[in-house]
Image (cartoon, rainbow, N blue to C red):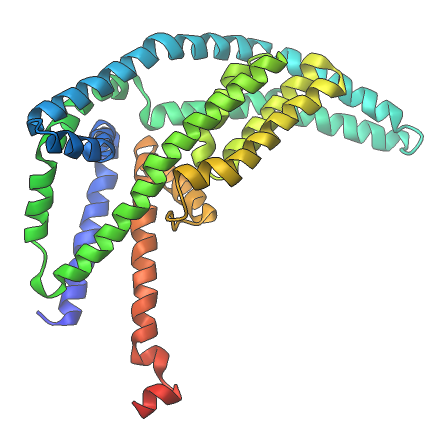
Length: 359
């Protein structure tokens, strides 16, 4: 098979693979979650195996640990989050009214510099922006997320199917890797292994490290905002940490929500400054200490590329696409760097270079 036919063959294979993903996206979520958990816990299973644990015992213990962790979260954290979410949603109109009042007071102090027409226009625009349209928009977003993958059926399948998938993958992980390795074309086997190793390095640095970063940030923000006395400080802080895997977006959303609630709740500038300071300090610690220590400099994924991958994955495949976005971004990033490196070694790039021509 010549090079052109090989290229066409693999393009057809990838096209068929992505078409199959798209067709089965509604039922893939528990399987993707099981694969992700098996990938995350495989190094621990390897260590237990090195300590003379049978592989199936290590896999069973890790699966049981993951299930118990999820159940504990459902029993302890979820009810707390749910109660705060319900209360927060019921108090949104009150916060919006308080923000309107503060905005009106601010406009009143600017009357000497604005005409009556300007004041009326600003008041109308703020009322339109902070009114029912925002609530309706949030509702549409939540409905889309619910319909895209977090429906009750998917949640039940997640609790039942995911542990099964995780156990069998953990138990057979090394055999699966060895089998796939044996299928590689002999001529390009080492090159493929090198690229897969690079993808694994990027994924492990991002996923395993970033998960810890998000947890640390969530705890920091939740404690800091709760100490200040901010209403719903726990849910705002912990939620900010959980979505901090999207670079800058998580902190920005948390900052806007926290400062907005602080303005509506306190009406004084000192607590608002303290709330803003929590996010500023958290961002400083994350950028200078937490991420360098826990993740390092091996990510190789630009923040803009991560944001695009998450949005594209969520749009095409729903919540399953969000889970697949980071691995896909890592693969594309590694392959792109490999392609650029190969191009720089090719005649197309070196044409006209005097050293190359002399050689």
